Image 1 (cartoon, rainbow, N blue to C red):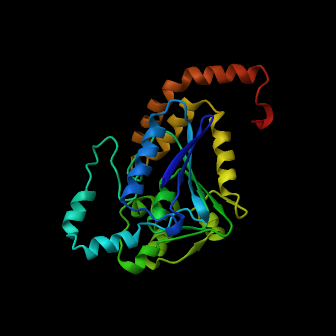
Image 2: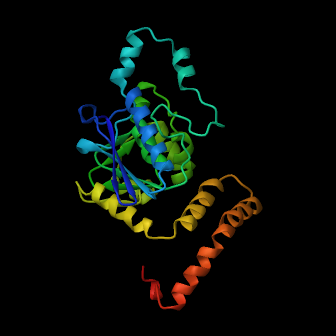
Image 3: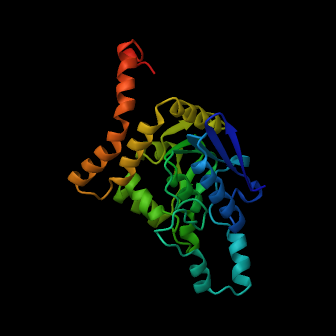
Length: 265
């Protein structure tokens, strides 16, 4: 299997396994990744997902070997474009790399080892949090071959690290190591080589213990506020949070009984 899913209590692990091509994504693996994350979204017994690449690399992007075969077969670029078109009104649109057009209600954590480049970097950007190994790296490596960013890279990267830094990475296609990625906010944690999966799973386990309705409401507000006027964003925040007030009262009662004092988790 190119993609397989495991459950650890309320954490879902989705693994991309095409190590022979550094987990580059072809059409079949894109469809499998999309299906795996749709299933996670629909699973009431899962709260957080971890996205991992087997064999030492997160993902090297679009499978250019498979794309070269399409070119050799005389595939019409317009026909290819039409096959990848999508309607933003679709509930579960599929992207060229698979899940990167999905807007999930639950968080996903990327466990990044080795290369997360080109479309693989876009998959990492789609995730809420990124845990990188100290010898891992990112980069818009597709710049060299004229392959466009069509899995959210031009949208999510500037929102994450700012316009100037995003343009630097997008235009130059240069390598970004884990130290720089942490410094500019491209990743959230850096761990020792070989430790990204366990660190990401531990981070996921730390999230599932919280009241999930409130966590998801706050996450949804953060993701949806970009580009809104302050008043609209505040209204949206309130509309999501008001449904969580019963949870807030229960949490206040636990605090009054001695739970969570002095910042204890």
